[in-house]
Amino acid sequence: MDVSQVEKVKEEVFNRLGISATENGIFSGSWKKGKSSRTIRSISPIDGTNLCSIDQATENDYNSVVSTSVKAFEEWSQVPAPKRGEFIKKVSDALENSKKDLGLIVSLEIGKVISEGQGEIQEMIDIGHYALGLSRQLFGLTMASERPFHRMYEQWLPVGPVGVISAFNFPSSVWSWNSFIAAVCGDSVIWKPSSKAALSAIAVTKVVASVMEKESVPPIFSTICGGGAEIGELLSKDPRIPVVSFTGSVATGKIISKNVAERLGRSILELGGNNGVIVSSKADRSISMKGLLFGALATAGQRCTTTRRAIIESTIYKSFTSDLIQAYSSVNIGNPLKSETLVGPLIDESAVKTYQKTVSEAVKQGGKVLSGGNILKIKGLENGYYVEPTIIEANDKVTISNDETFAPILYVFKYEKIEEAIKIHNSVPQGLSSAIFTNDIREEEAFLSSSGSDCGIANVNTSTAGAEIGGAFGGEKNTGGGRESGSDAWKGYMRRQTVSKNYGKTLPLSQNVEFRIS
Ligand code: NAD
Image: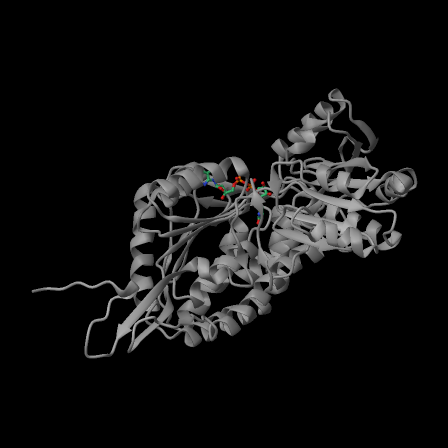
């Protein structure tokens, strides 16, 4: 029997990265076997190839990881921030050396096309560079005191071990957005990766662990594999973890948010999106078409920033949708390891079922399928999870378009006036990414005004997907309000302390309050 391309790539990459068929699921200073009787089976969505079996942690394992992380935090928080930054730069360099193989692991396990798998690792490298610069810029403000001979300022201090619970679709970069920033802030990090992406987490952790060992750094980065409902819940309820950063669905985010709030901890929530694009008649056709195609099709519609709704001006609606349908028909769907493929598989069988259910529900509600709508069986990849990218003509009765379906389904709407377009745009519960394609400055400014896009990210003449690391990433409404990555998102991983110092010879009180002691 011929060895499949997936098997071949797997064998080569596993050899180079030192991964075997069974892997320990816990790293906490050293690799440990999780004591749960259950294991995570990492299966490639490309063709169903069994990639690896990873053991899962129990509550006892979890407690031991947290104790190690608390100790590591005590030591690491004393290291000057610029030194912490130098270490992260070394981690980033090591990731760069293994970029090709780590990217291939992401492609094998998640089904991302090659360049997107490589892009995932590049994002980690970039954030490492960003964190190095940030390590010398954790600035606080100085305020004028109203009291004589007083000095008032704020300082930012490390907060403690940070829990990072990540989603399957960005199996490593989202960890680095949180972890590299948290580490230069002086925190340790405990990572609970998605069970659908545990192998990617193990591979990244192997590279990072070798740098920690070489540099004799305390085990500030721990990884613990296990079920969301077990390990994820333990993390969210644990008062030893002052900050929990969660990336995932709205439904799970609500559970995390409640658990963390109950103990008055801090959560950073990066939840689902339902991203819309307004295409005006005043847009450049080729830019808007390319932006829409990338946004709707990249990662097979499994990005939090995937374009799920296109709101198109009525005067161009017919010609634009017809060009869109034409473009969809020329997209290569299939094995993501082949360079010509644009759309790979969905993550698993349940994602395919959700796709199917959503298409039929949309039709039931009055939507019209303009393109796609079917499951695909690809020769040689019969055990993979492929679907046709789908365009559905919709209106406000097609209420399923309010939900985020993690699949390549694009709803198209028609509008007459820009105000109506913005209303349709803002009518969904989520508020992550948004875009307008127009060359009209008035439309652009309407979209960016306070009554414009209600999302955390607003783009003009570029796609909803593909954010850069330098900006604060996150969204409003059901997307959870968290911010990660660039700008001042680092403040989420530190505690602010306002300092007032009296260097005078009396004790004047603020607001002229007198307190006489006879
Ligand atoms: P998910 O909510 O199913 O799982 C996310 C993580 O939560 C996993 O690690 C899972 O094991 C864990 N988990 C599950 N139940 C839990 C519980 N009860 N307590 C604690 N943790 C639990 O999401 P997914 O399917 O892996 O990812 C897709 C979702 O993530 C989409 O909604 C997508 O939009 C969202 N996402 C958002 C962003 C963003 O930045 N806003 C980025 C990537 C993905």
